[in-house]
Length: 275
Image (cartoon, rainbow, N blue to C red; front, side, top):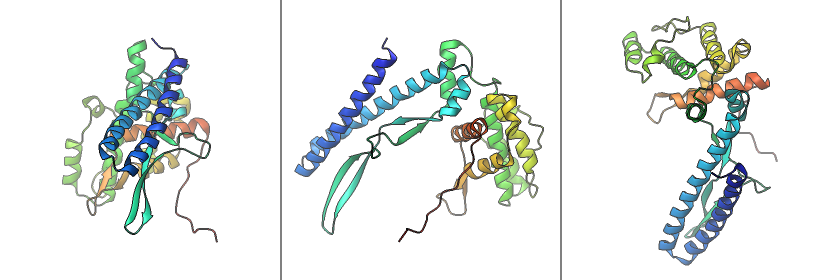
């Protein structure tokens, strides 16, 4: 089996190969050799996927070796992967396609892939025989919390009790998750869950993930963050898309990160360009 150093060297080799493939792609495209363009594109996609797999394995291996793998994972949150982009250059009828390797001014990768905590737990379990959370039911608790936020979203949008009941019956959730009880009643039409109730549930999930000492530190700002992050505008008119469980796990990882590090939430918006 390869050592960690050998895998790191392998990543460096793959990165150089992709950088060269980007140059070869641009040359082939400029020459009109589109068969070669297609071949290079397929090779590049394969290399990018190979890089991501190795990067994930190294990330998982690093976090698994920590005293508390879950805390290590939520502190790390993500790992860098290779990305490319195609830009159309030129004006009018004289346009050409140029491929770029995505990097910052120092040549560092700028795309990051979020750690999938459930996949990471399977990685740890295969090697140690145990999970990563303070409570083995942490992932089921996240699913139940996700349902709470989804129901609260529906109530907030004025959906009737028939829709709410159908949502509870049809929501894709593990059977074990249905048994989770946060001591918070599900919302009913016209009666959303109080922020206090949601905070109680979020605190319970944080406790299950990283321990009671951190669960006590959950704030109403964490509830607001999860409310906003877990609901986005759907492509369908007048429709909100609720987060799937994978995304909710990543949002809870960020909440845990904030609690451990003492971080604060931020808001991005488009600013007027400086004159």
